[in-house]
Length: 146
Image (cartoon, rainbow, N blue to C red; front, side):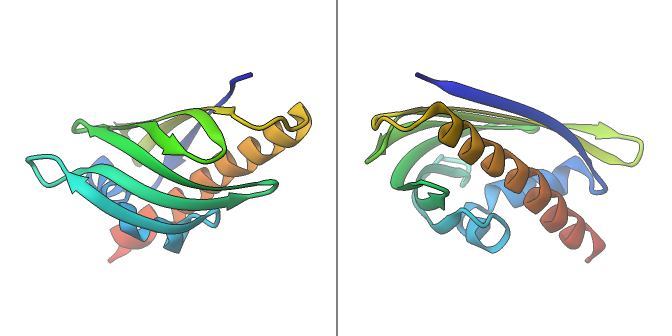
């Protein structure tokens, strides 16, 4: 059974900085606790990450995953290519400009191969969304401050 979560939050940094942080996928372990490793496997013609290998550990879920990324000026989208414990994963960041910086919309949908109680899955997903919100905000604001 697929579960999804969505959050929106403000960041005191311009969209270009938020997108820079998202494109720096190899730095994910620095600002996102669940990410233990991140390695770019291939890049798009414009140099943005295309296929990325990550190792995550969140609550009861520990996994090695290959993700396929697509980028626009204000979006970061990924889909699962391969994983040990997930059947499906889709993620989306949409970054829009505000008077004080950026508004970020984050959506995450996952479907596990293994059976876990729904409450545990939802809890792990909530932690992942909260971590993305706090970590992306802190890293973007740190980089914007110079």
